[in-house]
Image 1 (cartoon, rainbow, N blue to C red):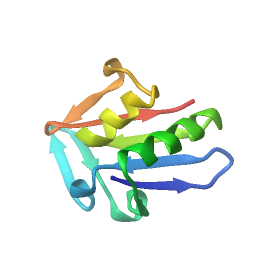
Image 2 (cartoon, helix red, strand yellow):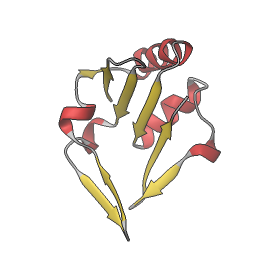
Image 3 (tube, helix red, strand yellow):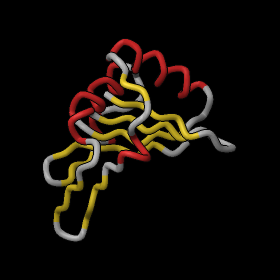
Image 4 (cartoon, rainbow, N blue to C red):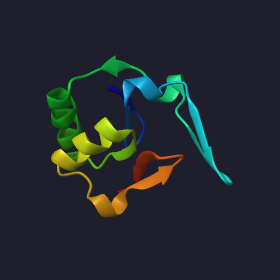
Length: 98
């Protein structure tokens, strides 16, 4: 997984499965663009990602999460539930705005 934290008045945490970086998925009028410049920074393990997600959640960050592994990691971190997951071209994603 890759994770990138965009610093702003409220951090934006982008996390995605490594194999999805640079790809675009479309379904009808909906599009999911997993841009390298937005998602790719540090490659992390599941355990590292859980710690980062939990810490950033406590800091009122917003989150962009894409891919099976990244979504499962966010669930294990207690950040999201199955109800908050969407899919485009069978790729799971979620956007969390606090």
